Length: 183
Image (tube, rainbow, N blue to C red; front, side, top):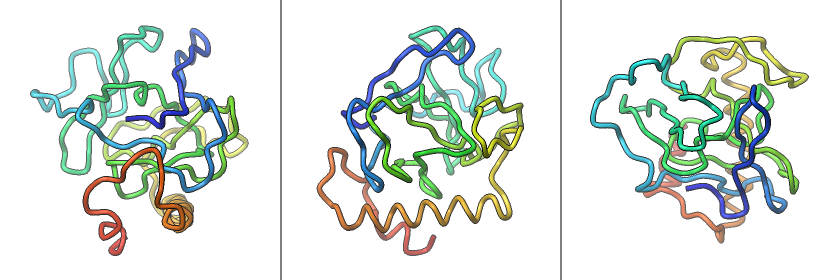
């Protein structure tokens, strides 16, 4: 379930749709939580015509569903506009080691697109990146080594901010914050 102060918008034929902030979303705010609308697929294989666990169907089709592989190896179909959160090599949201929710890594201004680094996803074939960020890596691939450590540090810093503001529009998954004690 996406943060209530977000909406899906069409960007372009090339980019498809994106998710945008309707109001300022402060750093440390939970921006997405896995819900009953996000469900494991019965068939754990990717549907025909899809490639990699981060693949989407035709991006300009508003009925398309986003599919990703969670850390338990299940293929999860996102049921709301969370499926339209686009990649950036300099993202403003992340889930870190937890694929059950995402938080704002920095303040997200009204009208700004919410983005995440697809390198957080568990398994997929690397592919070309056209995010346009000044920090663009040129290829979307799993975050490993120094890139992974820097990303985890940003997530942990945002989690510390989140803990100071327990009243949020979205509820955290069961098991938080114990899950992060071992992170």
